[in-house]
Length: 87
Image 1: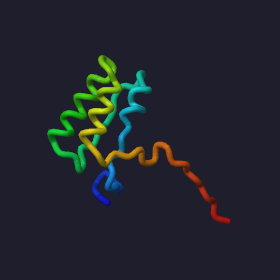
Image 2: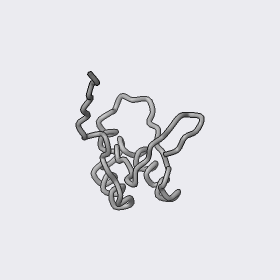
Image 3: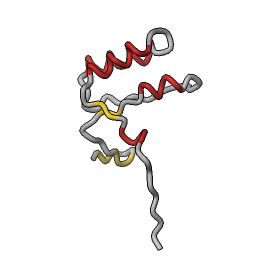
Image 4: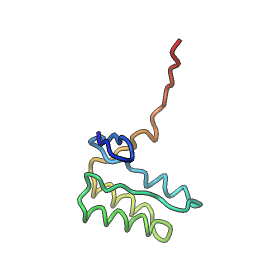
């Protein structure tokens, strides 16, 4: 947990991999990437993959990210959310 002037951010031991979802979002204006807990050189390579995503073979870019960062996870993207209302 990190609490700062922007609020509280919760991190896990896995890096959230949203690259495949990014490829489906062709009409977005920008994406924010967080380099927390990622080596600077690896993060630069990830940035290059995102920059090249709509110009080249995305399968190769996706594999490159997966090989470079072995602790990837889909996190909350594909987990069912259950809201419980108190009585």
